[in-house]
Length: 274
Image: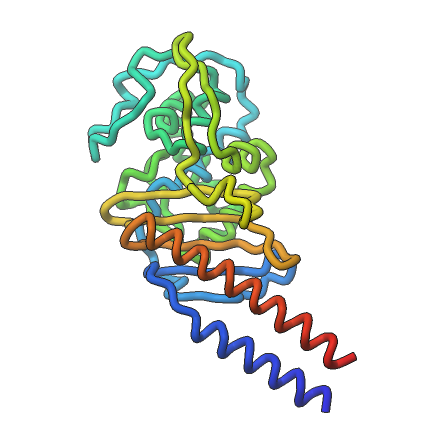
């Protein structure tokens, strides 16, 4: 009887997951404690990852144990000549390495991310070597990162690999703290400027977010990585190539509701078995 009930519950949960629909072209949700894949869609396809790259950039910078108070000058080398993206960090600005890390992660500033990599010991080439070594260490077999910002379409990965990357990044308190702040004032050349998190779900009372990073390029579409707590469990959520910010947010909210519903089914199953 119990085995039959468990089988019925498993089938119901599987049916619920298969009935889920997201507009993002690639997605995965993983239960952190068990490693169980709760939802996936084209999760092994290799695709551009845009600014999700910056989580890897941050880990490599923090691994180097550099002086986070060191002042760094943003130079012409840090200006985006590939996509000509805008930046609120002017050339010539002098910021601490920590401030650059905050700008790169929270507001996804490309100049800040490039300046971090440019001033890595040994320069950009040594930075890229450190990235390759980190990817190997994390067993990111389908991940390729050519530069620190995510502007290059050759920065590619899979939803499955990015879930591993997110879990690794969550082990860094600085990354967790910075990516879950909804806004902050940062001193740029003696002027306090207000910067906002690119993920509007951060600060939403309906969400408990422990890690967050968004990304966008024309090739990658709208992307997001989050480590969240919902319905009593920690989960890694990756969404890639949504057609717009609103669609990405809608997908995330749908998955959030799905996790809550699934948890209720599990609780009811346990009560029934008892």
